[in-house]
Image (cartoon, rainbow, N blue to C red):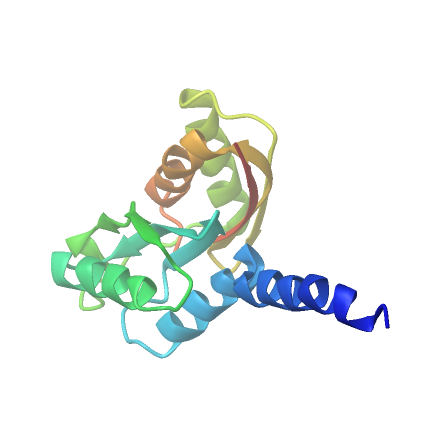
Length: 164
């Protein structure tokens, strides 16, 4: 009759496991999925750490910036939104942008990173789209994304690993 003695332990384990929410990776994907279908959110990047959604990138209006934060904040499991999105009215598609080659763009991103003293970031450029990889401290994320966007990239894809 030792069976009842283990029942409270099993119940406690089930309660603890059910209290565990989605992982940061799952939350990142959930926020990305919500933003994906919204017009004007193509340049918004998401990183989630400790259930806090960090939004970076660019949109063309303050309203779109607020919309992105609202969408992220409504994802179940997100406890806070750090909205570092930059409003850039020049993103209006009615203005033709001056194009540069991928190699020129990569050099410009590198120069911006040097100016901001940012290291250990890998840069790939394909058709004006900059992809960033590497590991950076959380406090540098906004600076990195701003420096990359200032280079004239059409879009910046954030695949950086953010550390505390």
